[in-house]
Length: 190
Image (spheres, rainbow, N blue to C red):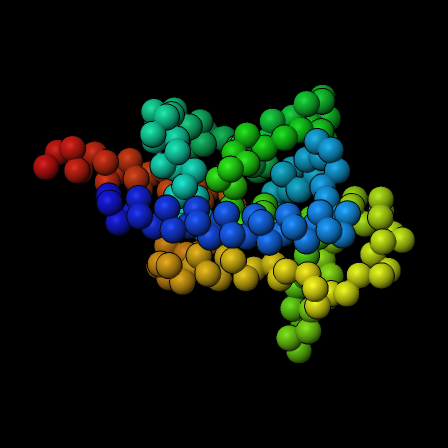
């Protein structure tokens, strides 16, 4: 149990580092997320590793909400992120209720770079942000942008087993909760 809690702490440290890197770039370029936009949160393709979801799982455990959330996740039928809170009927406006502990993909989304097969950086910008900032994007140097996936690789290196498989975000959280609740149960029994 202590090993997983320590891993959770180390993941959180990398999250904090990545947050400042991506936020700083997005602020400098003016390519920040649109106010209360939930487009990426609504995607069924948002994914994470169990390792990335440990900080969330421990937060829920510490707040005595782990079993309740796990029960909901096991019955959940929609693919969007469990922590997305919609503000309108269509669900297109909303916010993250897990912002502090969100996984790498959520931290790097918006405006950043990806490396192509030749190792060169190309910009990866959300369509909605791009549409609002077409003129700014023309002058950006991709080499100055942080790379999506760099911090996820650092996290995976902490524990290649827990960081190896990528799941839809709700399933990754469910697996992380099952793991820590099982460990808690056995540690209480001994």
